[in-house]
Image (tube, rainbow, N blue to C red):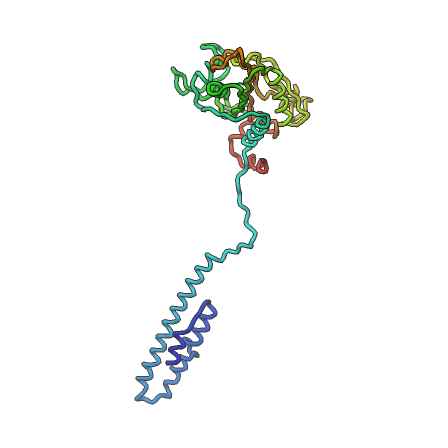
Length: 336
Ligand code: PHE
């Protein structure tokens, strides 16, 4: 009975203690084993009763052994899932980075926000009015072909917007001057994809409408932008141009960021690179949007975000922005 009590009370937490139990109660040399060895000293008449007794002990010892094995096993399983060493240094986790176009857009927004421009946006699927007609593109005028348009529907025309100038119209239709707004966004043109052109790209539109806004304001705003974006030494040049929605109009060039103006492949030896178009908002456009063109004047500009990013980070192929090659994207990981 004393041995039975001892067996019942036995505990084992690990393999070593299990082995100790086995040695003590199961093996040949265990207390139970010794009881069996005693058998030969027991007189014949009592052998049967003695045998029954020690058999009970043996069965009890074995049952308990199984129970202890099960306990130790389940305990080990639990501890495996719980024992995570929080003091170990972590393995490297691969996280994404900021896309260079996102970083560039963010930087452009930052620069213009500081001089009082707010943000606005419009739909990428536009109607003819907002993309063309309100912007003074005459019907059937070749100016419409300046932009190779992806049409979704004809009559009435619905198309993927060819420029962010459509947002100018939406803002002016809904707000009264003074207006100082910046509209970044995706635009679409039916163009062959190459290192310099894509059918999907990004523009950022700027619009400033108030009393007494003049061309000098346009020039100084873009001088400020160029210096903030590319550095103090950057020069800006305005080249006379034509857009139906601005008069006068000018293309915006900046001194080449690769050769500093001395001439290279990117600026084709001219020292200048075009980053967008600009001009004074045509009075017809103001009137189309319900703004009194006698009282108010304005300037607008539209710049290519890809072009700006390419100059800033010396990227030579526009297609890299949309190919999602991690070797390219990884280089911008530390930005912002
Ligand atoms: N929308 C013109 C383009 O895409 C750029 C522009 C914007 C020109 C605003 C003048 C004023 O080429």
